[in-house]
Length: 415
Image (cartoon, rainbow, N blue to C red; front, top):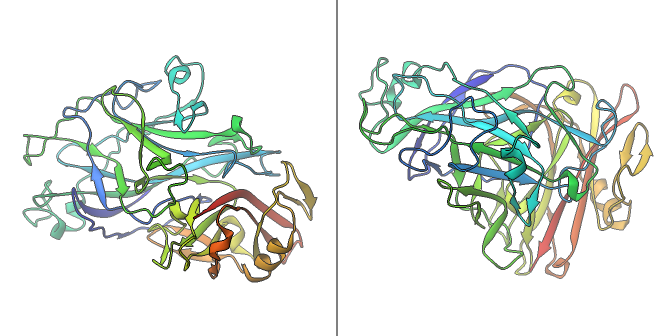
């Protein structure tokens, strides 16, 4: 587990990070264009303890999803087939009173959905899903590292300046051993859909106490200005949502998305896009934003590119190659030099893969080592609206002359 200090306004968009680094075989899948606010929920918070198994499905919670149709689709030789492995998380941990150490929220991976909303009944009954307990963090006040972010500005302070909260960016890893994380099926089918849900610890107060803001641990840092296309026309984000005190699970708005995300042991592809000339969007630790899943192109000016993440592969000579196709191949696809091709090499694939290639190299976006190849972005004509791009990459080793293929992702091109 690695950390860095962070300060964020409860209703503003200020975020700074700097800190430690350590090796981790982990590849991030951000789906946001950086956090703007940090949320608290009920006061007092509704939920069970930070060690409850299963977590309290009637309390405060938020989730993000990855579907078999758009991300959970891979053939990993190291895992033994059509499987993927969550091997950690990249997230934040804030607290309104650092005189006591905060606990991480319980989180769970579940696999049942009703439309775009996860169903948690089987998980709550203890018959489905995987619970991950991190528990008390043991962290001390960030003020001891960066006194200027606290009030008063002394190393002994445990309080943020009025209107702000302080905390840590955290990179959590399960370990170096293959299979030590959460292994899930990844055949690209509806049965492979996965929700990652964070359950707030119950009984936290947001008033009174040492700092006047209670003692409330906060992990839900959120982007509130995503530009993904509203494909369904209902103004909702089909990839994320929340629940407040048993009020029912609901998708959040189309412009919102949680910043915390899973990390994957195998190499993955993130899509980076520019919506209608507004600029390429991505998270603070690389990756892409929600417009990489659903991109508006009808007004012109939109562009698309990719990021191939492969920390393990970045340590030796290689060439990363990514291509977009209009035609997927059913998993397990076609064998190719040790990997598996999950898209048809059509003319679109041939033209994009000729441009989207280059070495996967070590890079540090915030404070942890990563490995990535980031492509140029290509113009998407308005006439492409209505098409779906199926995107896959591979890392070609210049030592073994074999490829390690990535998962397959999709991008819907909308008017």
